[in-house]
Length: 164
Image (cartoon, rainbow, N blue to C red; front, side, top):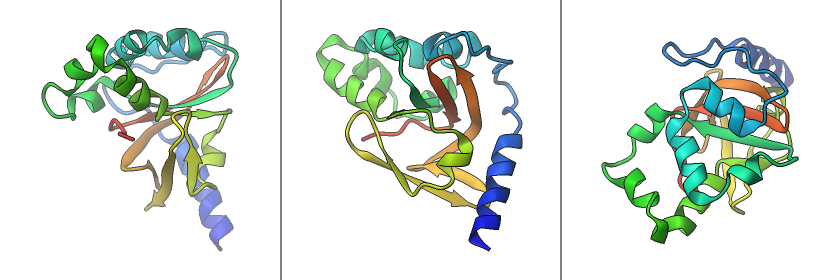
């Protein structure tokens, strides 16, 4: 029974349409994770943060990586001044910790994510993974789009910024 529910959940996730207002498009597998995120147009804050933390080159590397990518709207949910504070050079270590908490080594597709209870991030901590009413949550962030292909991994879009 659990296997059937899990398979149905995976099918639902794979069929999940893009959230209105986001321009995910049909990403080509030739673009790396950073190029794919930038091309989508919904991750400008994430791209800025990756650059400030010096992680662009890393996420353009061979990988593979799985990125739980918060949208610009997700960053807006943080308390006022949080993003600006994290982007300051003196807070680079904190920013790096936050960003690497959103990255899991390897290529973990939606069908695999739903089978997990947790995953170890590049930051070193574990994120919890739960399925509730057919929706996947990573920590408390809702997964709103899955399996966006990139040449060096996969992106799953989330609606909140996760903090380690």
